[in-house]
Image (cartoon, rainbow, N blue to C red; front, side, top):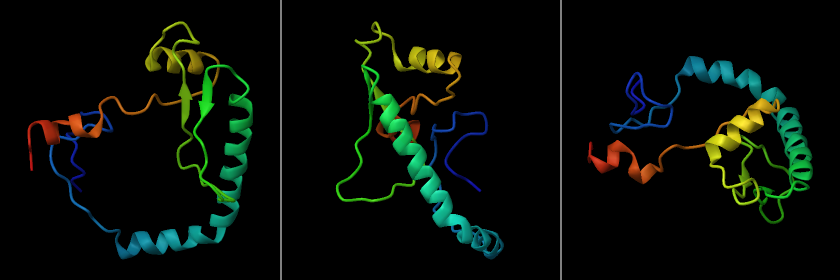
Length: 126
């Protein structure tokens, strides 16, 4: 399946336009079995996210992203945290990520290049 990436490229590096492929019947059958635990898994993710929000919000320079208004549950597909480099001595997000990992908190530093600067768009590979 072509997802717009070259074989040895970064996970978020797009060079060509990909397709909008749908799952197969077999994939759907496998996933149907997962629906039975969806509510429990979503609640676990929600509670974990609330726990992280509480802890990180107490550290100067770290800000969990705000939740929406009126929502009662959030799946937290990704847990996003903002950091203020001025509070941490003018480090960049990559240095921050390495420091977090050194403290036992694995994390991703996010996208290396914004979508509009991807080769797909800058080279107009449509």
